Image (cartoon, rainbow, N blue to C red; front, side):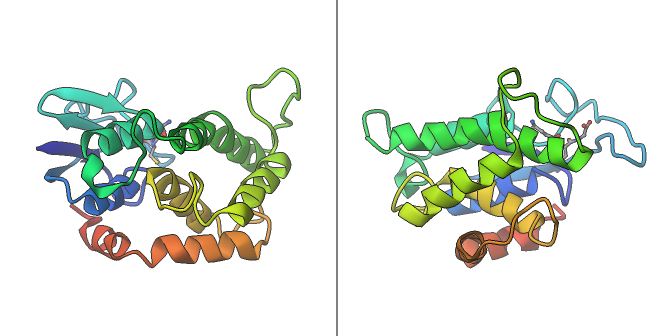
Length: 197
Ligand SMILES: N[C@@H](CCC(=O)N[C@@H](CS)C(=O)NCC(=O)O)C(=O)O
């Protein structure tokens, strides 16, 4: 049984979506976190900084969204939400998962905060470079790793949905169609219904 440490309307919501996709046995443990308005980390949350998401799988703790996505899709391979070691698509699958944490999130945060990204020094690039790369990829194939929807699409699709009305995200029919495809999945609706625990 997987325990998901979760606070509603945060980055952990997308893991309810992924666990629903995987039809994995799971339970939701609601925790508090720091927020911009205050709040405190929950001592029950095993994330080293009291952030969500984190999961426990029979005592095995996994934290950080990209790691949890990979862990869960390896752990529950039958639903085909990832790619196995040896599959050619594992290359793009891992690349887009790592890109999410190492490039896309820092790029969005830099833009949000108005920070200039020091090209050649920072490990990420500006949103103005990120989004053309993502759009180019999604113009080649319906999903980031290829023809199949994967956990990488859970991360990107939900992030783009969140920013859909924000000037941070450039207008793009490729992205709009992609978000629609991701949100049309029955597991997404089930996750929204379980969002509050
Ligand atoms: N790098 C983490 C980010 C997790 C994160 O920042 N989550 C926010 C909620 S959306 C949080 O828990 N914030 C509380 C805090 O920063 O203490 C991941 O991708 O899993």
